[in-house]
Length: 129
Image (cartoon, rainbow, N blue to C red; front, side, top):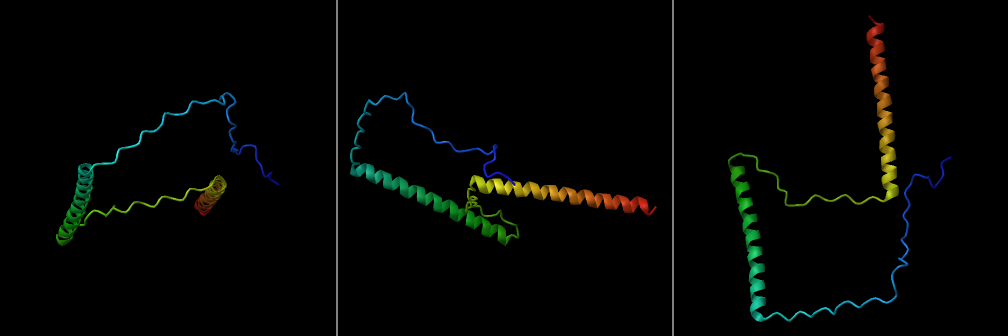
């Protein structure tokens, strides 16, 4: 009944390499090798990383302490939002198309049932009077 390849469906087209590029390309400048860090720099980096971890743990402990105090005073503490919301798995184009088609079908179905209920209510209201 329906063709497998509707005209309105977007197709993924593989791009062909540009014909204008010449086969001779200049080689990029050689990457400079980084000098190995001295002991002083390594120590500085480690101290910075330790400081970041300590401040994170301090903030976490302070928020937990604040929540415990609010709980002791019978104040509803704010929700813990430390865990990130799980991102929805990305749907493929076919799944997305089926999903939206089903939603539109359900919307139309609901609209017709709503109109039917309104018509029956109207009929009952004005036929019994």
